[in-house]
Amino acid sequence: MREVDYLRAENQVLRSKLKETGKRLKFTDEQRRQLVIKAKALGKRLFEIVSIVRPETILRWHKKPIAQKFDSSKVKHKAGRPEVDVNVERFVLKLAGENQPRSE
Image (cartoon, rainbow, N blue to C red; front, side, top):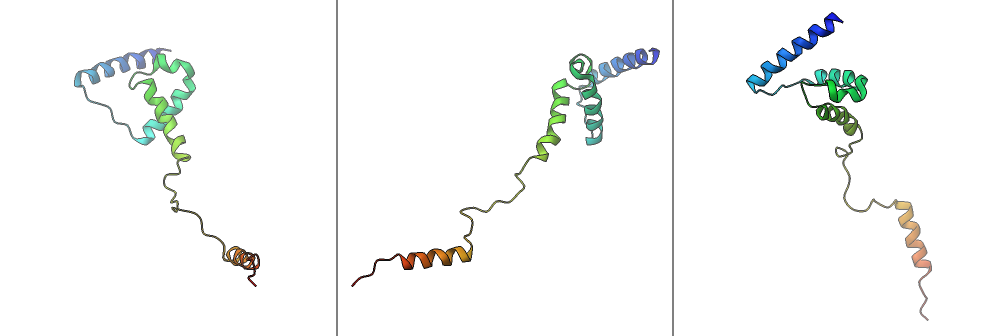
């Protein structure tokens, strides 16, 4: 428990130093992933504990890879109607020829 108390105090000092500089923290994808994993384990306490970023930011980091997994914007779609199979086209033309009224 002493370690946790020390780490909390150390984090408070570091956060106050960050506020003084006014610079924004930049995280790598791996750092974001690690924070998301640890934050998920906190559950609702996430909103009480997280302090180096907003809890909403961590939730957004969590949603982004999931959304990318189901994103189909990179799949190329052809414009217009799909092509008709040659055999189907021949069959339709044959039926159309057979159904024309005969002129006498």
